[in-house]
Length: 499
Ligand SMILES: *Cc1c(COP(=O)(O)O)cnc(C)c1O
Image (cartoon, rainbow, N blue to C red; front, side, top):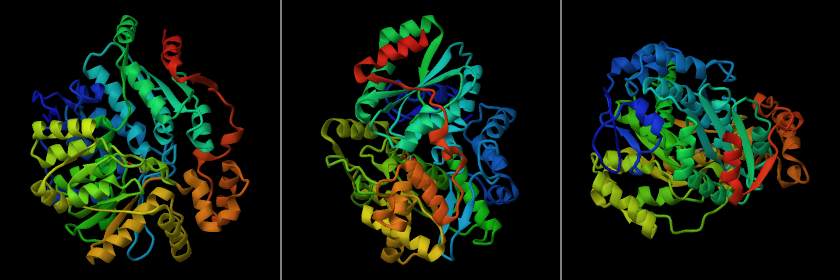
């Protein structure tokens, strides 16, 4: 069986169901598999003629082997179907021109790639509770700056044995993001605005999570907290699937031959998406380089180039907000893998990051890192320019996050001359970030004085693309959640709604 251990030590392994239920290890580390199973070229070739759901079951089985095949099939079928996704391909590969190929991960209900994991995580969790004999109801608490909250709501709405409460900064999310959340239906969902910024909201949730008295009170009522953010292995493992799926599709459409290498370019924030690519590579997927694309918050570009991780810099609010991150939590898992599971060194680096704001990994590890990764970043001006150019030349509309990746890919080709076939991982629908996209395509004037709902219409009319179902008529839906609380009242709100 594949067992899971913490990146911060304590080698006793636990089955995947237990790791998924816990979310994070009690010692603060992240759960990783003790061994990674290598697939054969035949295994990979066999994926070519499978559906996305079949590919998913095959890959998930390599990691969640305490789940039966039937259980995995049920989880996959509940998540990846045409009631939830707008295309039967689930994660289609779109060749845009001879060199440019996109892997579209935003056909789920909330129009961003978080759906790929958050549609299936609740099903893993429910099964994990059954398998571990858990009798409590699970309460998922989420602090969100926009995308994760809605994706978690969609994933957990009406899932038996769970409740979900989402807190967002009342004035810190876009209109579209806010309406997506406050119109959410489902018997087990609650959404609250907080008078404060994202940090206030996140700190509030963290305090509630670790409130011993509250946890005791909850236990008396058969309730238990868990987390749906990307430190949970259950969110990482579904993301490995689409790297294999994209490769199989490239073989299927004759862009490559089985066994050929490809590059993946990934717009990166918390390092969860690209880390799944690393696991795919370790499993034997023929990948030449994983290209890590950042925005102005380019802490990862500097790290991958120099081996020096330094978060002591100004946080910049950009037009690709889901990548505005200075502490990429999943990097911890990569360091653990690259040091052959050296929990002492990893703990030391993480403590240093926490206490001094920086750490350095040394030349040997850096050399190893460069076998897998290349990194670059795109300024906001370059990102807008990229959206404009790709639309003019290829009639394809990029969102602001994906445009960062396309720009960084151009820089990669110019710098290295590497012409290996490459896939840009596309993480959001352009409709989700319509203000910046309209500005890039039609100029500053086009957006003046218009609401985000009017901009959806504008983008749709000008590009002849339908507004995705999840964003259509948002402003006409009834508002279900209208409570806004003070940041010091969050715990009271939780108690009032749970007990
Ligand atoms: C979350 C997100 C990212 C960043 O992904 P990580 O796994 O955090 O690196 C990129 N683009 C979009 C649209 C996202 O929502």
